Figure 1 (cartoon, rainbow over the protein chains, first blue to last red):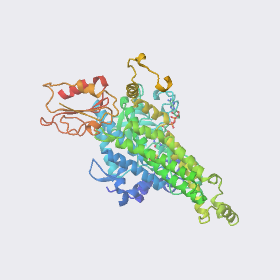
Figure 2: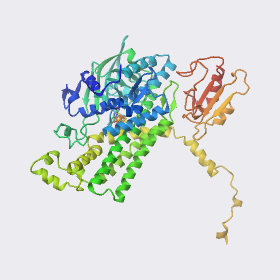
Figure 3: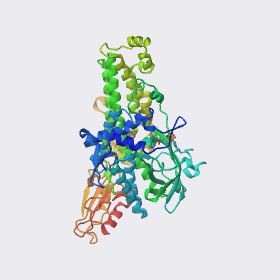
Amino acid sequence: MALKTPEEFVQSLADLHLQIYLFGEKVDDYVNHPLIRPSINCMAMTYELAAMPEYEDLMLATSHLTGEKINRFTHIHQSAEDLAKKVKMQRLLGQKTGSCFQRCVGMDAVNALYSVTWETDQARGTDYHERFKKYLRYLQEEDLVADGAMTDPKGDRSLPPHQQPDPDVYVHIVEKRDDGIVVRGAKAHQTGACNSHEIIVMPTIAMREGDEDFAVSFSCPANAEGVSYIYGRQSCDTRKLEETDLDVGNMRFGGQEALMVFDDVFVPWEHVYMCGEIEFSGALVERFAGFHRQSYGGCKVGVGDVLIGAAALAAEYNGVARASHIKDKIIEMTHLNETLFSCGLACSYEGVKMPAGNWQIDMLLANVCKQNITRFPYEIARLAEDIAGGLMVTMPSAQDLADEKIGPIVEKFLVGTCDTPVIDRMRVLRLIENLTLGAGAVGYRTESLHGAGSPQAQRIMIARQSNLNHKKELAKAIAEVGKPWEKNRVKKPTAVAG
Amino acid sequence: MKVVYCGGCNPHIDRETVAADLPQDDPDVPRGATVHVSGCLRACASDHQLVAEGDGRAGAGAEGASAGPERPPVIVVAGELVDGVPTPSSELAAAVTRKLKE
Ligand SMILES: Cc1cc2nc3c(=O)[nH]c(=O)nc-3n(C[C@H](O)[C@H](O)[C@H](O)COP(=O)(O)OP(=O)(O)OC[C@H]3O[C@@H](n4cnc5c(N)ncnc54)[C@H](O)[C@@H]3O)c2cc1C
Ligand code: SF4
């Protein structure tokens, strides 16, 4: 099967007839729904760029299973170079969409499961890895999108899964049969779930004794019986329902998150990759999170490129581009953005080949990458707002601009430098609004904070790998701690003594 | 037996102690064996591989080369991992020795 075209992707999505609910109603023609379509366009871009020779080096890879050219989003990384190309591909897509393009979670899930299934088999004599490779081949050959579903709703965070008053707040096995398992529960905040052909479920935390039914990983078609989606709202989302492209800021592209519900879904054994092996759940969580923390060193940087460009344009249109403090702010935004990219590349180039044969990022550096991501986009956004001026949040609407009577007044007073059309000034300011506090801010800000784990999750991983004892030994050696002190050899400096 | 060290910029383990505790002139250790000793999980001594390519032992990683008498063992220590298996630092040399004699 060849790579899909963007059109084939959209049609294949429509053919799934997913159970999607939005504003309390079931949406049948979801691929043409104005609130959903921008997110589909983003996903389609992962197909479009893959067909363009000028992006092939980043977008395509060679499958280690079949030797065929595949979309990199379905690839198992085979070298440190592959890991770096993944980050560069994500930067490219962030630049082309100015948004979260959603396909990364599935890529990160398959790469985490690849080594964990192998290690489970070595320890437990199971055959998860072969099952998983068969499934992976299917994803690659059909060029499919998989949703990486890790985060459970979690209920009372102080209680383990098996002690929750309602166990359904964590996805769990309700029945084991000869031919498979039946699962129930939900996954929250699922990026691109309604734009996926397949769902890959993983546990959300390291499971302990008593949590065996919650230590479950499997895949199922996105339209499996019992799976439904409640579409997540985004800031200013209903602007997409207005018959104008101006006020949305980014009309063609957008992110997507959904609450995905499993109402007694049957999964055949051939698609089960973990079933009660609690001791491997922690590794799966850490590896998926690690790969996704690396991902942000690409995608958020690409969106940052768009925001920096928009801020520079706003400065030009306002006539302040040559002011030294503006230039300095653009430099600071660039410095922060490239620091994030450096982290994404560093954890890639310091990656290792796992015993399973795939390549994995350096965990410490991936967590440092994500910790910076929880901060720098906020500062970049603050500087963009500073440069844009207050108009980005007080500007009249597209309808006002189009109105026969009000329009000329709006044009008269929203003028910037005289060679800039007012409409273009408004477009750029709306884009900055979109990314800093509109629909785009879901991906650029809050997802930067919580996506792939809240900041504290990275700090725990950083503490675990910080090698503090070694640092203390280094300091002791330099400071000569423990060396006998010969007090009587102390002399006053000559100048003071004199 | 050959010991290959990483550069030593970030050691989580005492590499020299691990190397010193490996068996010397032990007739049960195949001739030409190599032990890569990296201070941390980045495994620089073995070119970032947690299981060495060209290792002659069967089952040494998913892509372990086929076993054969002409291919001596290659073991990777990377921080507290021996061939990718978590191992406390005090037991690293013993774990390597066991593998060398397998
Ligand atoms: C836009 C967006 C997209 C996302 N996409 C995906 C996706 O595609 N797939 C996926 O699986 N997940 C996705 N996530 C989920 C993301 O991984 C979670 O948001 C994150 O792990 C935090 O979980 P939470 O939202 O439940 O917040 P909480 O876990 O409730 O965290 C809120 C605060 O409570 C603290 N906290 C939580 N538990 C404890 C505890 N036990 N002890 C002490 N402090 C605690 C946290 O540190 C944090 O400060 C996405 C999130 C966002 C915002
Ligand atoms: S947030 Fe970034 S890494 Fe995650 S799915 Fe969206 S674009 Fe990909």
